[in-house]
Length: 218
Ligand code: DGL
Image (cartoon, rainbow, N blue to C red; front, side, top):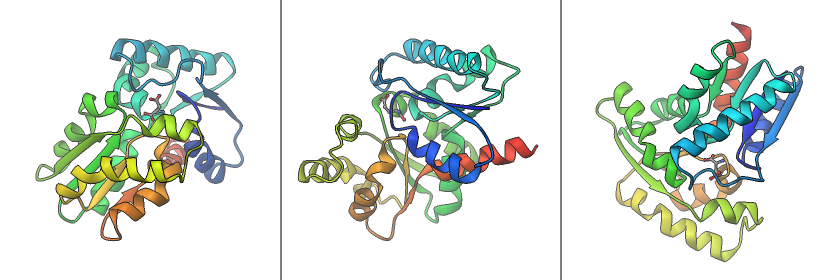
């Protein structure tokens, strides 16, 4: 049994890819809609919630945990690995970085996510460790999660908010943009359109599913 959790419905974008990649496995999914959003909470709170979410899944028979939430991945993955050393923990940050490093030609990489994810600096740190010439531009997009949760996926208001949020990434000349929040793949078509065809938009969900398969094979 594979346990998957997110702060809400966004992790279902990862779940969809996991079901495609691993149809032979059983899954248990926790969307913590009672306490969402995580992206505006303190690091201590996110770590506590993540521990409780993982324990919930382990109590239901999970033997591998997928943290299908960027905020929890950015802030709580190390803490989860220390708390549950016998359980493989797969987070969504590293697979996205792997894809972005392959995709970029200029080293100018953008990342959008919640306030907590961008404030953690994890993408910038890990990308520049592996690709020292990289210039990483992060942008917090706090309004996008509530819009997705409300189902406002293609309203004019959503298009206009996305355009405003993506402006600094255009200005930074990024050639690759990481969707650093599990809700954003639901807005992927609009983000792709706004960024233009010269920018590669990385949706981590597919890379996460491949990472889980590789881990299970090992
Ligand atoms: N699932 C969260 C993430 O991927 C976004 C929603 C939230 O703020 O809890 O960062």
